[in-house]
Image (cartoon, rainbow, N blue to C red; front, side, top):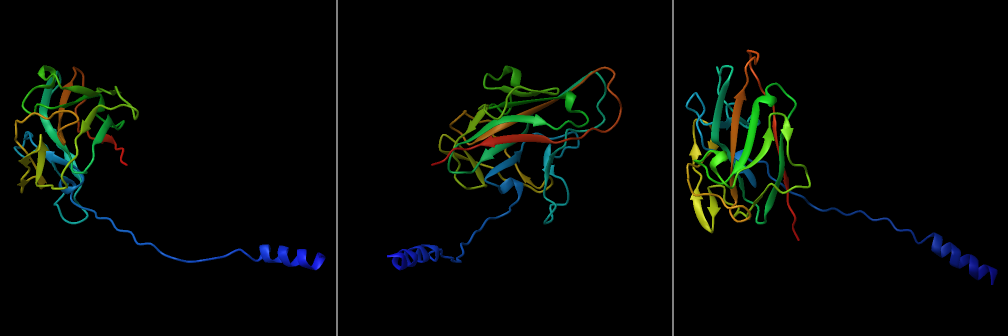
Length: 223
């Protein structure tokens, strides 16, 4: 009996198995205007080039986009870009914008940012508008749902409203896609939204150049 028990214990001890296998993966890195959640231009800046543009020569490895809000503004001045840029969802499911904040960099206290559906309207007169950044203060956090971008169609050449495609052609100067469409975006239905940015420069603002980062936070739930 003891010999039999020892054989059983030994068999259990030796039952550990080792194996090696592999699984493939793939992904693609593309231009910011062709991404699954992408940025498009609309308004022009003070140099007559679109506010949203590639920060560089658009060569491989140098395709980050930036928002150029112009230069040579003065104290006690407000400059507003109603559609500084647009955000378009190409995923085949809804994507939620939870909040937007600006890095603690120079000039962030002079910035105001809204999301709104009417491209050619000032956010204050657009009933869809939501202020997401107010001179250093953010009104939403990761648990919020500021705007829901409807499901896209995986086609960077257009954005969609109610199933109707709106072209987003290429701008060779800014090196980004753009739209001048005045078809209003509907929250939770259409796959795009406009971002209004205002510079509200106070009396006593110091002369110099200002720059920073705008962080746009997304959330998606899929099955």
